Length: 284
Ligand code: NAP
Image (cartoon, rainbow, N blue to C red; front, side, top):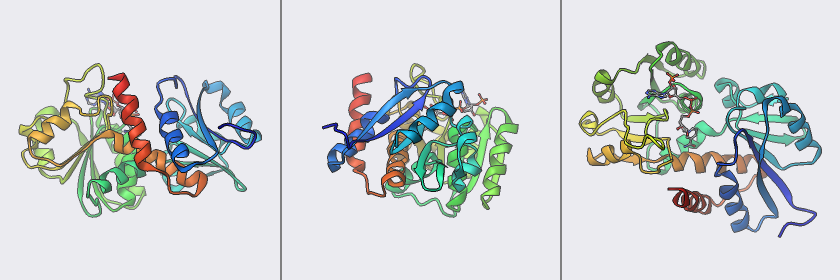
């Protein structure tokens, strides 16, 4: 029940109506019996400053930031976590006595999803496809966890920028061009492959950057796309005998990390996952 003591949390973005975060966070709050509620607010770029001071004045418990504001919002933070600073993006805001703290839990979310599947990336060769916002966060987290990262993008200069971020995190990183004909060879040299591009997402569900034949070396395959949950890439990987990790894991774990930062509690990750799967089923 919502009452005068209810702590409010929110996600901001534009658009934001498609966000699964309200269902996901509220499922954990409910399961743990917390007097908290999570809502979504559509906020435009020119409204960011007002929105953040408003959240502070209204004593919001915490805020998530989604597209397209993850970089722009940094200008309004008093402090940045190491992950947020290295990635150059914020997805979680914590209001504390230190002011407005900017964090980035996306990369850690991906690592926790891999860990849940029994994959420890330390010392492992990890191939990341794509060099956009999600790839940056994942590569930085991989670097901080001691992985050896190779990042490929259609525009090799973008991949180079991401590899530089990983090196700043103190880890080994290489960059290259994403060329379909050379992918089988690239995959062979790696133990984990992560698709961090939108390839395979609705409505292009029949697309995949890698086929069963190109995965014959049987790396662990993670796809961060979660609509659909079982992407063509994951189906191809299963047929090739690879261990697979879907994008729902990253989504749920980045949210769980946010709850740990805001409330210092252990969230109900299972309830969060169930809520996401239910919401996805309704949409598919
Ligand atoms: P983004 O910033 O737009 O980056 C997309 C990247 O994919 C860019 O490097 C882009 O290359 C590349 N790309 C796009 N189409 C491609 C194609 N046909 N072939 C090869 N590369 C291609 O997007 P993002 O925010 O990183 O998100 C990427 C995907 O991850 C989206 O599907 C998003 O929904 C998903 N995601 C999932 C989670 C999760 O929690 N599971 C979290 C964040 C994002 P160019 O620069 O050459 O266009």
